[in-house]
Every structure is written in C-alpha cells, then in structure tokens.
Image: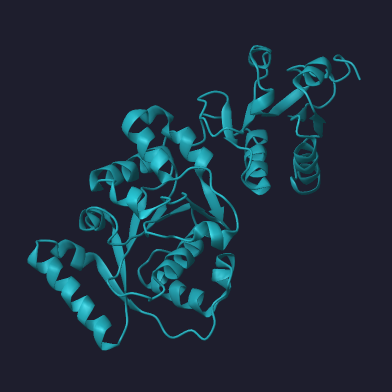
Length: 339
C-alpha cells in the first residue's frame, strides 16, 4: 500500500505502538469486540505509520506516548488519542492511561468515532444537577462500603454515577485485582492549582466497577487526614461543573477532616443501623452530637437503613447487583425516589 491508496477508501483507525504484544492484543480486541465503523491497522513505529498513512486515510490515530513526536503533532491528523505511559498529564492531544482496561480504551475510541469531540466530553455540564449522596454510620462492620458500591452500581444502570471511597484502607486494588495509576489526591492538586486541566485529568484517572465510575482512593490514611473539608467540597463542585454525573456517592468515615461539613453538603444521607446494644448506643451518641453542635440539618437529611442478615455475599464486587443485598438496596433507593 502507498499513501495514495487510501485516499478514496474508508478512513481507518490506526494504532501505533512499538510494544508489539500490547498493540496486537488491542487490535484484536477492537476488531472482535469494538463494534467500530471502520478497519483497524497496527504500526509498530511512527516512521512506518507516517510512510503509509495520511490525515486523509486516518479517522483516528491511537498512539503510545513513546511514539508521539513533533513530527506526528505537526502532520495534521485531526483526531489523536495518546496512550499515556508515564502518567504525566498532557493537555493536548487527548490522553488516557495505556494500562487501564481495554474495555475503557475501546469505549473512548468508539465515542470519538461516533463524533463525540473533545469539546463534547467533560467540560460543560449538559445533564441534570448532580445529586450528592452521603453514606456514613458510626456503627462498625455493617456493610457500609458494600451497600455504597451496590447502590452506586444500581444508580449507574439508570444514569452516570461516580463513587468515592473515604476509608483509611479501601482494599479496592486487591478486590479488583488491578493497580490504579494515581489517586484522588491528583485531582485535588489540579483543582487547587490548575483547574483548567482537571476535566482531562479526571477522564484520565477514572476507573470502572461494571457501569459505576470511581476515583482511586488515597493510598493511606495519612494522606486522607491531610486534606481539608473545603478542598473536598471544592472538588465536588468542580466535578459537577465539568461532568454529566447525575449521582456522586461518598462512602465516608471519621478519617476525613470535617466529615460533618461534607455531610452537610449532601442532598441525602444513608446511615446503616444495627439492633445490638452497642450499635444503638453509638448511633444515639452520634445523633446527640449532631443536635448539640448545630448540625441538625444532617439529622433531617438522614435516612436510617437496617439491613437484614445475608447468608452469602459474592466475593467479587462486580457481582453485587445479582444478590439479595441488591434487591434490598434497590427498595431503599426506590423509596427515596432516586430511581
């Protein structure tokens, strides 16, 4: 094939990555599972790509960071998706982590091919106002995180939803058997110092649990405790402005500075209860704290939830929506008019 052969042919998706095994795996996946409107070609160097392709033949260039150069940048390709290998954010071209799930990379390629430009992705809100949902209880070992994730997955089946975990040790990397690139602390930095880049960084970092999006939590409770409540609140407001999430679920703990101020920002709060004596006593003490420190508004927005005893829960958090727990949670959120 020479450069002119493709001028009258349908434009194609071109992959460019010197890591041959990765490129072949991605190409095979896109061809078999991508449901894409055009052919997919693989090149193992930018030189071979530039010899064979032009902007006229290329619908989308998906290129590894190591192959990206000024020559590529100045060649006039309209749509470029850079697979980031270093986690150093570049404002242009659009970039996302090379090491996240192939499904997510495929989703973004499909969106671009469907005509969803950079300007149409997170930048200006188009949907309903984001509903901030807090989940917090002083009662321990009550399935709070399981409840939060299950609720998020159910809500994500109806509208875009985001989950944030505020535990000292979330365990999500182990439960999902994958490593995260960075943590929500990176977003807090961008929100404080380079807000114009936050939308791109958010897209770069977001992970998935089924349909539910989530941000990788802090790596340690020491980092978590160092963030002030107003920084979190500022981040929530920015996320609402630059995304179309209709739900944001906050899985909160006392490790968070100003947890009561954060709860005050929530539209609704779910507090899980238990019937044993210590649990009742802890809940009573917590509610007394709210009423005695002028946080009665939190009390008024709180919905108590007493979960039944479940004989079995799935080991995989990706299976939460297929359990008795899901039926229980679905009833709770339906009662509150969330779905």
